[in-house]
Length: 443
Image (cartoon, rainbow, N blue to C red; front, side):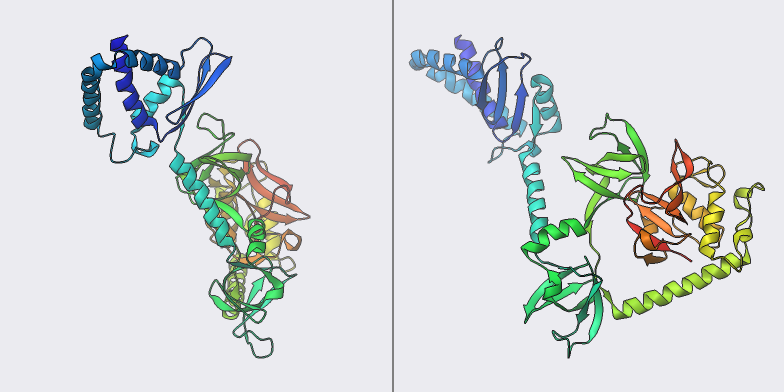
C-alpha cells in the first residue's frame, strides 16, 4: 500500500496539472449512478461497481499521515521524479495548459481510456464572444422601416439637402451621428442623412437586423457534402459546388443547418465561411448606371436571340431557340417555352447537357446559352446576373428564380422549370415551393 500511495501521489500531481483546464464529462459503464465527483476539472459519474477517485485519495492520505515521518524523503524523491518526467514532456509551462495546448494524441488517448467527452473551453467561450460581438455591432446599424425607401440627403434638411441616394425598406446603413432628428449614415458608397423617424437603430436594430439580414454559408471546398445530420457518419443528402451560397437555418457546434434542393441538411463549418448579408443604399449615380447597363444588356440579349442559334446539345429531336422567338412574343417567353422541352431529362451533378444531364445552374446556363447569353455555372452567382425584380409576384416568364443552393427558370402561372434532383430530374414545380431569395431578369 505504501508503494501504491507513492504512485498515486505522483499520478495526482500529473493529473492535477494536466487536466485542470479541461472540461471533461466521463460516464461510467453502470446504469446506476451513485456519486458525481468534481476532480480537477473532470466530472465522473460513477457506477456502484466502481471505485471513486476521491476514496482512493482519502485512503492514501490516511496511510500517508500515519507513516509521514518515515516516508517523507521517499515521497520527495517520487515527486522530484514526477516533476522531471513532466518537464521532459514539455506539457507544462508557467501556466496550466488548456485543451488547445495538449496534443491531439493525448486527448484521443484520454477519450479512448475513459469514454470522456472533452470540450475546449477557450473555443466555446470564443464562439460565444463572437456571437456577442456580432450582436453588439448590430446596435450601430440604421435600418430603414418604410413601405418603399427613404431618401439619403447630403444635408440634414428636406429643404436644403440634395437627394444623393435611396435606402430601401429593410436596407441597412452604419450609424455615424445624430443631428436634429436625422441620422448620418454610411451605406455602400453612400454617405449622408436619413430622417430618423423612418429608421431604427440601437437596441431596436438588434432584433430587426436578425430578421432582415440573411445568414449565408459560402462553400470553400470543391464539392461539399450536405448530410442528414450534424456528423460525418450521417447520410449524404446532396452535393454543393465551391462558391455556392447556402442560407443558414441554424448554427450548431461545428455545424450549420442549411437549405438545399433535397431538403434541410447540415454542413461542417470546416468547409464554409459564414457571413450576414444586408441590402445597402444605392446612390443616385449607381441607380442611373445600373438602369442603363440593364437596358443595354437586354437589347444585346434580344438581338442575339433574334438571330437564332444552333440546336441544343446536338440533338435533332428538340426545337432550336430561334423557333420560339417571334415578333409577337417576348424573348423571356421564348426562353420559358424552350426550357420546358427538356422536362423528364436527367439531373447530373456538375452537368450542363440539356439532353444527357445537367444540374440546376448548368440547366439555366445552357438554356440561356441558346439565346446568346452567357451565365455562370453557379446558383449563388446567378443571384447577381441581369436586373433585380421586386419579388415573385412581379416575375415574368424567363426570369431566373434563385433559392438557397438552387436556381430555376420561371415559366409563368406561378411555376418554374428546373433541374431538381438526381431522383426527379428536370421537372416543373410551383415557384413558391421554397423561400425565394432573388428574382433576376435577363430579357
